[in-house]
Image (spheres, rainbow, N blue to C red):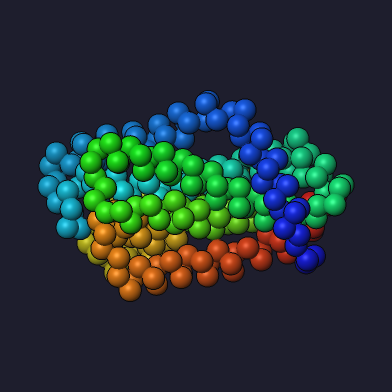
Amino acid sequence: MNRLSVNGIWHVIQRNWMSFKKLIRVSIFPNLFDPILYLVAMGLGIGHFVSHVGGMPYLNFVSLGLIAATGMNASNAESTTNAYIQMHLDKTYYEMSTGPISLEEIIVGQALWAGVRSTIFGTLFLLVTLFMGILQSWLVIFIPIILFITGTLFGFLGLTFTLLAPTRDYLNYFSMLIIQPMYMFSNTFFPLSSVSPWLRNIGWFSPLTHAVDLIRQMAVGNVTLQSLGDVSWLIIVAIVLSFIPQRIVRAKLNY
């Protein structure tokens, strides 16, 4: 694995940002439609029959969970579908690798950009909860940092699968078998404490579970030692996952 250059990584992020700026207006609605739909269906629909969950109104519980889920989905879209197009169809990775930028730097830059996208769209949904009057603590200013860490983690995870996928159709398996179950069973719509122990234990390993817990704690100003553990867990997993796509990128992209 080559030594990484900050300039090379920054160039990748800048290039993605320039492309994103051209499409930002048409990107906002698709990325926010899904969580808003779940907010209406679950928060307002089921919330009509369920009063309080986890020590807060069910609408608040779901809304805060969807902030993290929105960030995860934005990162996943960038590190799978968008990354696959750049790798194999547009040959963007090939063009950048012909210059002074290594494939490893492209991978790290792409994952960090996925973290930026996670922060952008997760923060937009955070503003939705702000207008709803759900946020109760000044600690919410740190939520974008959690979104960035979580998005970068899912960026490395998505890029690993994208590099291993033989065709674009295989990306659907990652979304259906990994991302969608995390979306549903990571403390987002119901507390894991109320489910069977085996499902609770599986849910604990989901990065989204820790991100959701952190965001809820920050939203109500109830940060504890557990919060430090959640942050540490996310950072450690992100670092571990970062090495995998860097090590396999040259074998899978034979430029």
